[in-house]
Amino acid sequence: MQKNIIVVGAGPAGLMAAGSAASQRANVTLLEKNSRPGRKLLITGKGRCNFTNDTDVDGLIAGMPGNGKFLYSAFSRFDSYDLREFFRELGVESKVERGRRVFPASGISRDVLRALMMYIKKSAAGLRCNSNVKQVVASDGRVKGVVFSTGNGQVEFMPCDAVIIATGGITYTVTGSTGDGFRIAKELGHNIIQPRASLIPLETVESWPQDVAGMTLRNVQATLTINGREAASELGEMLFTHFGVSGPIILTLSRKVASALIQTEPEIALAIDMKPALSHQQLDARILRDFQKHRGQNISNSLTDLVPKHLIPIIVQEAGVPAAKHISQVTREERFKIGRILKGLTLHIARLRPTDEGIVTAGGVDVDEIDPRRMESKLVQGLFFAGEVIDVDGVTGGYNLQAAFSTGYLAGQCSAEERQRKAL
Image (cartoon, rainbow, N blue to C red; front, side, top):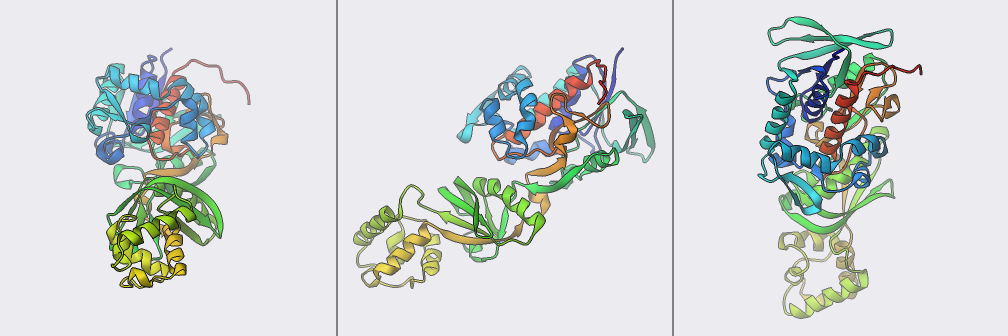
């Protein structure tokens, strides 16, 4: 007998889930509360859509510090190579860039969305926009249908055999990610791990970053300490902004910051090593060589080969050395201080940027209550989850979108199966 399946949310996870279920000859209706699907997908990767990472299953799991092991079955069923082939068959070739990030060859996110819409059409899944799901109805431990409002304000009930919740998280609310899935899951008895923004820029106590806003530092080591203890360290690229810091390594570290800020008001510091390849001794020798090269000049002009020009006044100020001081007057201790700052320019973190600026959501439906082999609820038969609504999250580099596609694919496949539920 043909199964009737409702997918809630037409983002990457929902589109994949709907197509995957319909390809198994299920009767699928995809409900999207916005006037059009895939709004958040269009802005991912700065509009270029970094949809996966060129790595294997173990690599994908390593890129998901938030419950990555839970995704083993999903990644094994549909990994990054499967995803690239999936898009290739739909006319979207891909390319690999720095950090093994995978983008559509065109560099245009709309091509990815267009391919997903083609998949929906080919699989004969139905799409209804302006349909805001208010409730998933369940009784006797199984799904019965959904209640949703339409664009004209009418409220409808649609019966079904299974529901896939793919409503996203709480970031970029303008795209429709307003936490609806968390509310629905909680109403059905699920535990929700407190949702919070992740991969989000950080505001600093110090105001000087605004003086160098827009400056990018590459190949630096940023080390995060929380209450004096090292919490994490990342090597790569970062950016100064008018409010503090951002960029790939800062976004990765922000996950630790977000978790710390949930519980207490911790003291959080960020030390930037601008020359991680050099020891303190090697760096001091380098500074001496530069002093020789620029002899006859002041301290500010002597560091131009080491750090960006506009950052030099901040370096010498933090070291307590007058910027106009002549090189010949710089003491050995002052030189050491400059070296220490170059190896550990420290900022203090005041807070995260507003939640809407987070790239992904950490937290969500507790993975202990979801069968990882099927993405099905352990509490309610016929209730499935896919994408950001689940308590999984990763670093930058395409991991989060791969998780959305993989969980969507698995949920779609398993929701369409005829399966006798075993007693728990």
